[in-house]
Image (tube, rainbow, N blue to C red; front, side, top):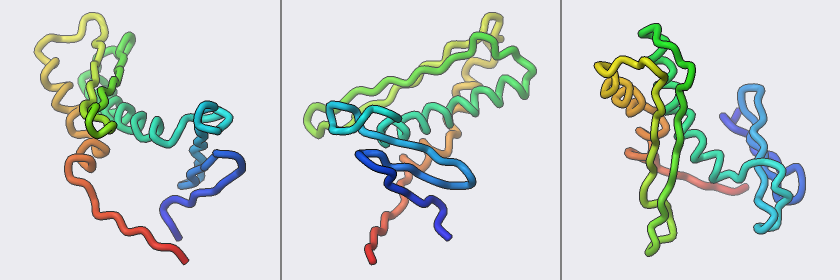
Length: 130
């Protein structure tokens, strides 16, 4: 059985089904879709942000630091020559009263994100058709 099964429910929608969940995607209206769900690339970017976020959350929880006001943003800059993303920037807004002594440690914990690690050491891709 495949780790992820992809289905095509109509239009420009493409759904990923795994572990009892469905992650719907669609293209934006300008790209011929209905804009009914995030585009696949946006899901990819959100996986980076949420992966780093779970490490930030876990760090705070392990130190019993309040997460009220904890927020993470992700921004991208395109490389004008390749038209691909050239830089991903994340900014973590720390909760009021966050101990200064843990600031570099929480950043290091976010750096453990498995999605980022896979981008830095990408797997080989094999694509087949039957």
